[in-house]
Length: 427
Image 1 (tube, rainbow, N blue to C red):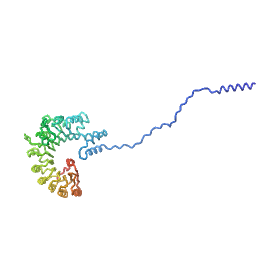
Image 2 (image 1 turned 90 degrees about the horizontal axis):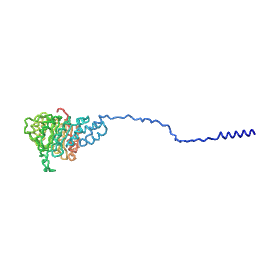
Image 3 (image 1 turned 30 degrees about the vertical axis):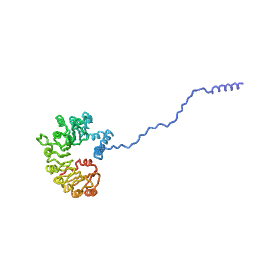
Image 4 (image 1 turned 180 degrees about the horizontal axis):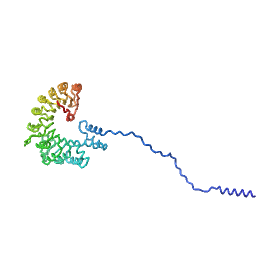
């Protein structure tokens, strides 16, 4: 009995001690991820930076299109590429500026504000300024603003000015002949305008086209710049000043004229009095009379180095043969006499001519074969036609090692010849 009681008590104790006590349990299931890895730096090859000087040189040479005009859209695009390109491209854009109205002047004044560093840079970059003074336009540029625009360009070297007169109310006929428009009156420059121009830069090249009946405008402008080296005048032929006590003081090196009727010889005496020893280049865009050409040759033939003519007759060719120092001859007409290419100056280095199917080429071929000083030939193909002997011309140039340039656009032909193709060497 004692054993049974003890065993029963043990079992009761065991059941009480082994009964599980309740607990609150919760589980959070988290997916297993690999341990984070630190990103490894990407190895890159060192950035090769193109030299900025080479980039700017490429832009400067690429700024001209196929017609040798400045491609302003290209320069604008280059100015937006980056900060380094921006200033250089804008300087090329501002190298040539055109002003047609008072709003154009306001834009220029804001862009070249001298109180800012960028404005001073852009103002200093202007080399060529083209201005149109049209008194028939209500919002056209005034003479005063024209003078102030010149003052904004301290490094200006070339000024191209076109002057148009104003028609009487109700008498301006659209489509009227050009000679009627050339008779429109235009006021002379006042003393205030001339005084401002005298305070501005001393330009070396002046192009003035007078499409008005004002005969004093040219002499007024010439009195402003006594150091001109190049003068191009056109439109209405100028006349001798009414009070011309002293000749024009400039010693010109280049003179270009484009008149339907050439100026009087008295005016030429006044204009070129001090240019006897300095005049080297003469360009005539309208066919001159034989008397006018002989006058130029008599007075300046021994010093002339470049002559440009629209055509050439036998009498004109004989006058050109007296230019003993001639180094460049330009004749645009394809029907010029062969005499102008035969026996030219022994100093001739560059020959430019027009060519079509009817051009007599034998004189040109003889000059290429015999002229040992010849260094370049430029040809304009009128109407895109090639001469039957044009291949022979190119072979003759290749045999002599003479480069030949060919174009079918007369505008490109003239721009190609605008630069100086002859070097400054003694004949």
